[in-house]
Amino acid sequence: MPDPMSVASGVCAAGALLSSWQLRRRAVRAEAEIDHLQAELAAERHAASHDPLTGLPNRRAFYRLAAALLTDAAGQPLIAVVLDLDDFKQINDRYGHAAGDQVLISVAERLAGFAGDNLVARLGGDEFAGLLSSPTVDRRWIEHSTRRLSETVAAPIRLSGCSVRVTASVGLAPVTGPAQLTDALSRADAAMYQAKSLGGARSPRQLVDSAFLTER
Image (cartoon, rainbow, N blue to C red):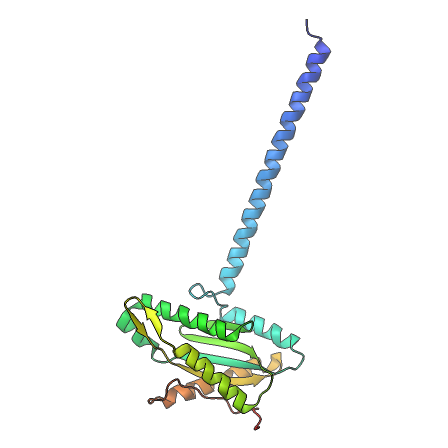
């Protein structure tokens, strides 16, 4: 006949193992739930600060990140860039909105590739902005960089069954501190619209904001 004490000890041990197993399962479930919530939170934060089509930072994130970069720049000049596609509505009208979206994605990829580690963003519609590091505010260097950016954007874009070429109007202005960001973007924006108003056959369009540039 089994010893009652041994039976009781065995039952207690089995109960302890079961309880331990259940606790481990609960801990694993809790960890999985925490990981899931953290992933959801990260996705929500990314969605709140990034353009859903191109993946670039959105307008709100651009101003926040640009202000932080200018604070850390310790007076080193950066270049505020505003870029707007020319006659973009014609792409949507002729090829459809899906093609228009592909053009915007391609332009975003080209702008990001041109900027490298620098900040670029989609402000909305077909308007993009950037904050680019510059070794100088020399006019010739800036004009050369602006021309390169315009030519990069204007390269043919492959769509289904055809390719299109979209030019851009570009404006830029040096900025040396967070307090100057809004003013620099306004000047870059004004320069961009002046380039757009020139129209004609000049392609790609580009205009350099003349304020604070040195002649060398």
